[in-house]
Amino acid sequence: MRARFWGSRGSLASPGPDTVRTGGNTSCVEVRPDDGSLVILDSGTGIRALGASLDGTAPKRIDILLSHLHLDHLEGLGFFGPLWDRGVELHIWGPPSPTRSLSDRISQYLSPPLFPVRLAEVPAHLELHDAPYEPWMLGSATIIARPIIHRGPTVGYRIEDGGRSLAYLTDHEPALAVDLATVQPEWVSGFEVATGVDVLIHDCQYTEDEYPERAGFGHSSTRHVADFARLAGARRLLLFHHDPNHTDDELERLCDRVSELWNGEVDLAREGEEIAFG
Amino acid sequence: MTEPAPPKQRHIALILAKDLAANLASAMLLVDPDGDLVFFNEPAERILGRPYAEAQMSSEELAKTFKPVDESGEPIPLADLPLAAAFREGVPSHGHLRIESMDGRTHDLEVVAIPLFAQADQLVGGLAVFWEPSEEA
Ligand SMILES: [Zn+2]
Ligand SMILES: [Zn+2]
Image (cartoon, rainbow over all chains, first blue to last red; front, side, top):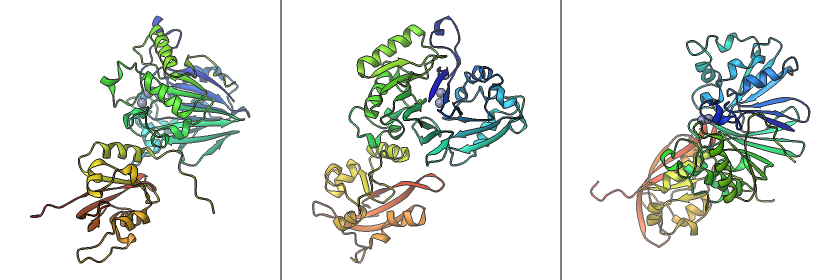
């Protein structure tokens, strides 16, 4: 399995001189299971460049796994080249809602007046699926989706392929309900998705000083991420969903802080970078 | 036959309900999808007579321990208790019962039991809120 970040910013795209090292595009991760199929985590603004990179090499089937439908995870979808290719079969998976279909919820954004074209009118063959509770296969990879604590229906994904595993918990506030320093793992949101994983991609939106003012917004602080990685027994942690107000220098300090709190391998998710599993 | 493995993780609806219970002044207990007790809060401890940490039990043990009876003193079968009814019917259930707490006192209780569905048909647990009606009510 190979993977690459096309967007690691949270909340709002934030290009500019202060974010060139981590990147300004919002959530999008390309995952390539060993059989060469294409699985994409979220369709933030980063998905536009991913689509462009496929130029002529797009597989016939593409699967997009949406963590949730907040705009920073959805807004790139309409600008994803393969959406406009009649020969592409695009499967979109997302968190189930007790009241509205995935199609209804995505169409609320992909329709006038917010977007010029309706979802039903795009040329690609679209199929929308509620992420099931039971594991399922995409190409050679096994996918597990579980609801996690954020605002509104949100899932975390675990992808296993060829003996490697990756967990993607982009917008996640496990500390909302529990004290992560003392709680039993069975009471921790996201634990089942992240336990023993090779690579954990996790929300690290806030410093410990910023968090109290933003408790309940659905995101994690440096301390929460460190506690969660320790509980999960992750091998490698990549800090994700960077706050638009955090500059590269600030993000590097955030990363140092997580390293102080957890003695595993930590790095910032940087746009354009391949994720190393080895 | 081997015991089924305990779940790796509770559903977030149950995790959030536990946080609600821990912050609530009303007595509240939580059960897993099998009906086994997974938590009760401090106001519930005062009625049930034992801290939760010392009182983890299955639904059968729960019924045996608290010996629920109706107004006329007849034992209430497990299947007729509010939580069992709520699970069976898939809707909230209400009942009156008398229990014997673990410190030997009897309590008349009103109980509201609610099955927790995360999706239309995914039962992830249940909760019961209970209280002692005031004498004059
Ligand atoms: Zn987000
Ligand atoms: Zn979000």
